[in-house]
Length: 165
Image (cartoon, rainbow, N blue to C red; front, side, top):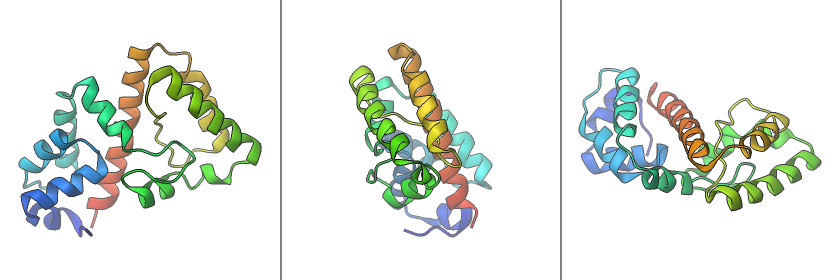
């Protein structure tokens, strides 16, 4: 579903708005709350509503959203074209680096029980690998918070890009 700016988003039926938001952040509770606050005057108001809705999410809600993402460096997830676009620079990494990211991804998932999330737009494969290795030093509670912050960055970028119109 193509959105042509904030007015187009505001005009969507509730279910369509919720589905559109869900593709930006895969949690039904969040999508319902943000859609219910329409109409919005600008993207900033949507982002503020998103922040407010995020503040009430549980760890399980965050894990639900994380599960909709492909592993960094892989295709898939609930918004595959968007993920590919966001990881464009990563794909330019060397085979050695991309293989190391794949191996570290598996170790990260064993350690934390969810995919590694990072706002990848504009980051090189080497930068992402370094961050992946650094974050493996976190405890589970800290890493959940870090991953949630990265998920919020990803979602804000998606909302801003899709609602500019």
